[in-house]
Length: 491
Length: 140
Image 1 (tube, rainbow over the protein chains, first blue to last red):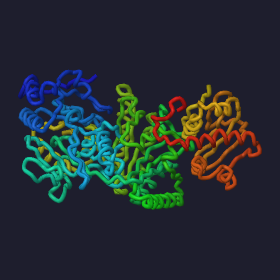
Image 2: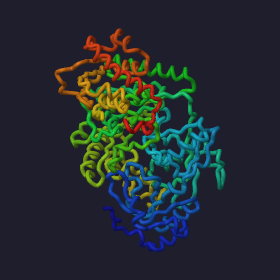
Image 3: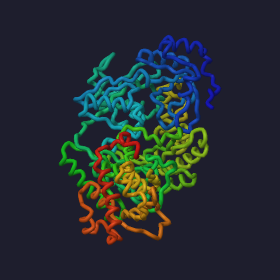
Image 4: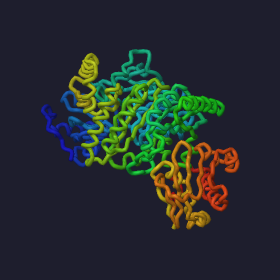
């Protein structure tokens, strides 16, 4: 049962006055304080503690948001940005109550596609499914990069929180792919960051093409979980959509053997993405209720999507992939490489939910509860991470779901143990499990992203004091009244 | 009514997928119902799976195998895919020792195995559909 915690938000202005102001700004039909409307915004799939917002508003434009920010700044009322609530970190749970701004309903337009400089200018509520369909229908020669996330998850949230998608082995974190941002800061001013910074009132649609070489103010907003301002526009890079594509699947025997396979293939620079999942994750997709691994089964499966402008180029890339795999075999690593289209037909087409992105992996969310330790990881520690985290799952009698990626041609990696669980039933046990995993992974240098508050609390104990002081200084400077998503990162 | 066990290991899952493709086919049902044979399939690097045909049921075992195995087949995953996608025919695979069969002299059992397994594999492979949600729901 979720309850609004005791707090004293309305000492400067009464809740009724706030409601009146919100209705004045957004219109009656776009404001609610009914518990039945607020409840869905009070929790997410994780075990993070639920908390009700006091109001939900549906903005349509910047003028409304500027008025809101000024009003909330004057009265120290929290603002929590929300898109579709699909994050796995409690990021939009209103820790301190306040006003939840749901961008997903009305600020969800694709404002411009620039074919020449290959970017899309988006409002915060645009979803992956929406962008995918729009590009396919109107700009089939361009593509975006999609995550293991449902089509109704938000593109901008994923980008500004440094998510990773199915071109990540080429391009790295999605945060690196942002060309420009428009943000409303705590004093209610609108700042445009990136090459779109020219122009007093408005930027040309074709001016959102780069973020350099001026001081990169983007860092004031990327990964801050909405703590420094409200992002109202975001330009994300697009890429040519090559006509020749093929995905290969590496089946790897031996828990730790997957690590060198991922690293070596990543360094070849021929694959678009590398995603590896434990065998239990493969079985989950085909509706095995509590998947376990039997003796003799492989331990991991890794997907290597490749693309090319010509068939010859694709074949050449395959040749490099084959020789890399052969070298690994010569080193004694047991790995089998197959064409995933061929394999999935014979094995089970349901595993294609990991290929045809964005997609909902229904079995992953079927118990309502989903949580993780999603982290950026040093690739040389992957072996240790796998061998130490896998037994923790078994200790708690939970199927070991491990998901990993290699980013930007093996410059860094992603290590992501995932846990689905029965929400409201198994939360305590699952939290203990996740807590143990977190201890191990942070100890090995992993940096969690989209972090819940309890996790940043643990991180703060390990982070150097200089960083923390600078972080706190910037937060205080950007948001002196602590109105933007307060509580995140223990602010 | 033909019943095919839903496997919980990777190879049984795959065998279920392949055999279920023809579950509603009359000719296939005639082949498998009351065949009453135990076939051992081993994919190199993986593990052996016993496929049990008994009455109107097809079941899979990965341990505690029956003493009586009527046919043993061994190949690697690449060969399995090569046969399914017609890059090699089974006879050539046997001659090249890529497909090893113990019980070659049991001609009737061998022919039936080929009709049941190899033909089904080829049919699944030839199906152009790559979308799970467009599969025939009656069978899979």
